Image (cartoon, rainbow, N blue to C red; front, side, top):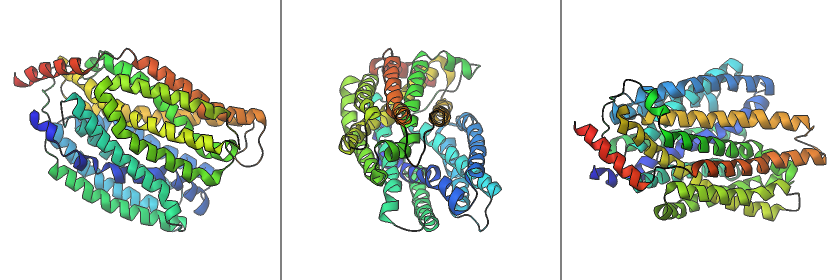
Length: 432
């Protein structure tokens, strides 16, 4: 298994860049483009995208369970199989035909989301099995999430760097990212060597070892709270910068500071995790981020400098959010394998992905009705209670949720010593 520590991690991480760069406009520019430029309207666009998301949610567990059958070879095949599906859906979504309507949007977005799921779940499950080493897994996750952040940064800054009409911008971005994605995926599949071997499942049930996996239960609780904490400000960022801080024109600057800080924070948290362990480092990050983010609930139009500093501080914490829990997830899969459950990284990653998508849906479902209840106006003047509600939802509630996540992960028992013992047990199962 020593060879797993020599994985060319930068090659494994490459596909994350175009995947992330394509995902951002699908969430940010595409809804406004179809609702406004193509004339579908908000209701039809929202209903169409919601229908496409239902297809995506149904696919998560199916892809996760199926890609677990056959190990890493099958994961690579799933990654390659999802590529044409994503490109076809992306072509139809980003470069729609003349006169495209709601049905076109459901089909194109459904294909795109399905392709994205078909690629990302096997991709992340593959990463979880590239090494059995406690620290190397964090480095693998760091490379993947670092490239992902670069892709997000590209997608966020590209509109300012390329002042094109929306349809031309989306077309150019898709063509460039699709080309990079094809090249990066082929390189990763061909050049990244096989990782660790997993024992065949010896437990008659797939779900019983998962339900008995105490570290996973604690990790998924903490991740659920933190996912909702991150989804609320992500959903409300445009409204908060416009109505709360009062500088919508500075939104690109705030996002740039946030994501650059996250990229720079990855090696720092990698070092901290090497000294404190993953779960202690993540708990530290959650508490510091909560303390730094909470004041944003009280900011006004004269506090732009302070908000910029908060963006830097919370972006630094985002680096830990992206890398450490993902590495910890690879460790809790060992708990499953050690009791005879076999290699089920795909199932665990699918549940992880499903949790993130549900958190985004829940954030919108909670925040928007509450803002409507206090008569918040996206444009125009707002009352003090409306702005207070916006601040509470954007920063106050997420800070409390992050503290809850820090409390939930406090009792996480899977440290480096425990992980090594699990690996010995898995090795014995593999050899018998």
